Image 1 (cartoon, rainbow, N blue to C red):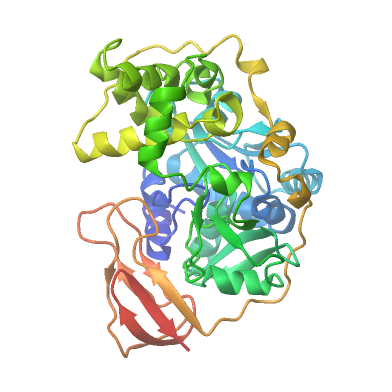
Image 2: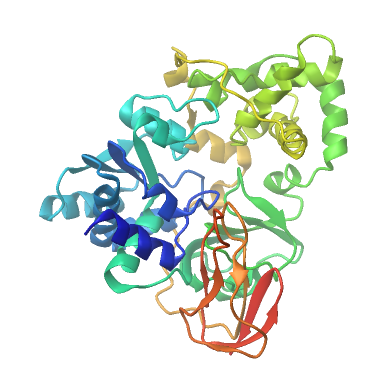
Length: 444
């Protein structure tokens, strides 16, 4: 199959990166690279949908990888997953051996955080450092999450658009599960499908415990990038660090930061050789005199992994949140940060400064939720979905339906604006459109 046909089918299906910010996949596939990395690292603790998919759908994932290789003219493809996921590893290795997949191999990752960060993945597998603020394409690689690869195979072979999402539901629920739900399902219905909460006073982390966002709104919809729904007591350690008032965080930072530099010592970007040094950003904000203003621009290359906040800082403050605030302000001002280095020398201490997942789990106090949950075999049936028009990087999709229209599952309801980066959106259930604004509500 030729590149234009693959790119066209992926674009039509509305596929985006399932493991991160939701970069439109058809754009990645329109490049030429040396190697394609299938990311099955299951980076954050507790999230288990990627290992499940590799257990159940290994052949289809490899088919998706082969299609990406074909589209990008890549000479080699690699599925990357942690060795601790033994069933997934065995399933992938067997599928590779059975074929018919050429030039595809398997890379076993260590059990550390953040192993699934695409820049870390590229270095661990290929030994190449992605430039500051850059993307893997610049060093000859494309990285695609394994659920995205599955969606690619289904789109190209069967014409199936993205209407469902695999996710982990865990924490304080009666029956932790990996489940498949229609995009637009409310997280309240997801929690009920897992037997309901086991505590009365709770909040929900959407995504993983390190980088996920907290909400108390049970009407929040599942999107194409929702990897987890974690129910935790409102006073839990993970929740507390995510709901601090931004002004309070900044004020405490200026008073309390002891300049130990542990946030920099353990920063994954710094360890790759990037010039990000979080402790200097903290010092600059506290004194306003020690460094030039361009130190603050280094916040733009922070990946917000949360190691500095949840693991490194002995004073229990949040360089991650500080960087995020600085980044937002700089982006609003239109600031762009040019790379400060042309060559990158990873730290010689990188190997001993990786954060073991086991120690991170203990620090987060989530060990009781760590068991591998089973898959919910039956479909989750919902009567109503709220499907956001922006579930991806770029411009929101433009609605192509109006209130009162009848749509089938898979019908196009949102189109990419002309000459814009974006992704299509499709109906995840059959029904009637009852609302069109920043999201499209469909009711059976």
